[in-house]
Image (cartoon, rainbow, N blue to C red; front, top):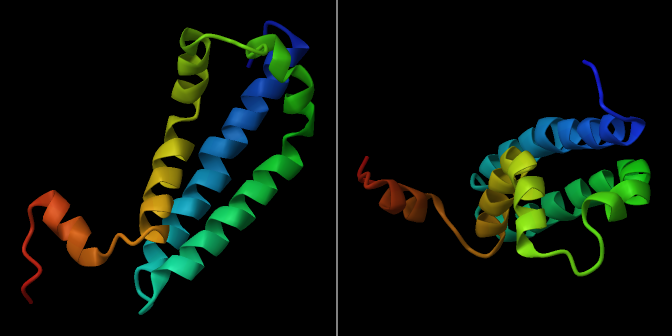
Length: 117
């Protein structure tokens, strides 16, 4: 892939890591936590470990973050960044929902499905 600058290469690599391994880890472990009697502690642990991993690989990105999101950046600057992290953000929102109490029944209710077996 041709990059327009070295900074863009670093950003693309970080977003690739966030939307790839981190997102799928969050999503799969979020679903797995629903199998436990009390999924909330497990989901919080998954969130903490995933965030620690993302912060540990984000050093080069933090060095050039101010180029993309300077202090006091308006919302219109944040929207493209959030869009590039859409897979990670969906996985994070699901796992946070499990961590704050979402259950299988509430998922089925949200999807309009019956929980009868």
